[in-house]
Length: 471
Image (cartoon, rainbow, N blue to C red; front, side):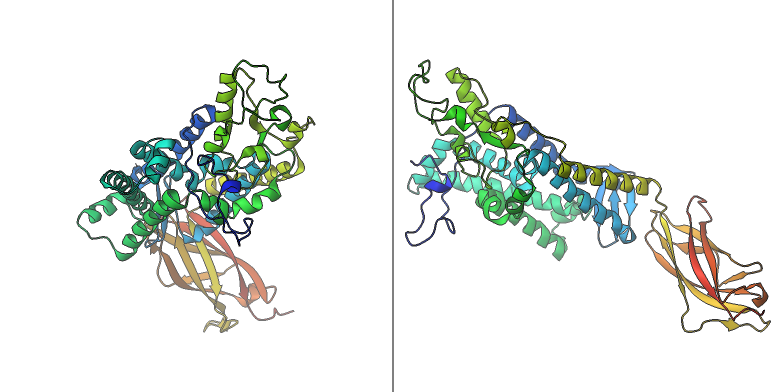
């Protein structure tokens, strides 16, 4: 039947194993309305609103989110980070991965069904396709019709809209790396740089190809998450499940008939759950890795059950244990471990950002000479100080030293001016009377403080080497 396009019904070559290869047959997902469809559209709308709107939001003259790679500055909601803060990016990526694992272990593939960029942009492309080509049956009829002026006009309009939307998506993506207002002004006069032009075109083409052409193929064959997410599932993970005990044996019937007397279950075999599935699977065959947990089949089945006068929930979110009538355990060891680690990492990042001092000091002792004696008999070590100003403004810094009594610090020039994001090297000499040394290696500390902002200060330990003490 043309309307059913599950993998089991797709044509394959006679000499090919369907398990290894299946020739793609276009899927025409039927539009569905309901609780979960509304939730999905709302979440996608919010996420795409953030994506397209964020580059245009400014805070104190700077974009609230900008990865300024040439200037090596990262603007994050008023906070300016520099390459020295790369640890935060690492921690955020780890937190994102753990969040995905935590949500998957607890509630299945909610990310795929509601928040994945592929799902979000595919929904937008499907919406545009329905507006231009019509509903599912109209699209199928149009594709089967011969090429003529009408078909060329409709298909051309659809692809033109897709391409314009994809180009705007690519432009917005680059707006996270170049201030979007400046980017737009230069675009209008055709003065974009080569890398900006490349990434606008590349990201736009990727959006057009993935959401317009590949669609479910990317989820089924290209996405690694679909392959390894099963390792995070157990019998207490929330999945979309078909209640076979209630639905089987399936069969068509008229509304109001006693299907129980006919030996039939609640499933009327309307195949709507298949027709609304964006990946073309039949949820009645059980859990499949192609399922992205979008719940379109739940909305479609609930609508049919409501019209037939049956209880909803023939297809529903449930766990395998729940479907078997066994107790469900939510707080399982893997969920607790993911949760505890995630909370600990989040707390660490928040505390670190709150206590972050946007200045750093590295001390490098001159290794060419252990120590040297000055003309007045004092012992001297030479150090190179690397001062990193990770604030958004220029500051003047003064250096001091803590060490044995009488230790002096000789600085070539003070205070030291360091611009925003700059790293300045400063050579200093520390000397002390050898009588004040009690060992050959003594712990000392360099202190760095801003002249114009006393809150910007840091301290870095070092070693001072000298001759063996006299006994």
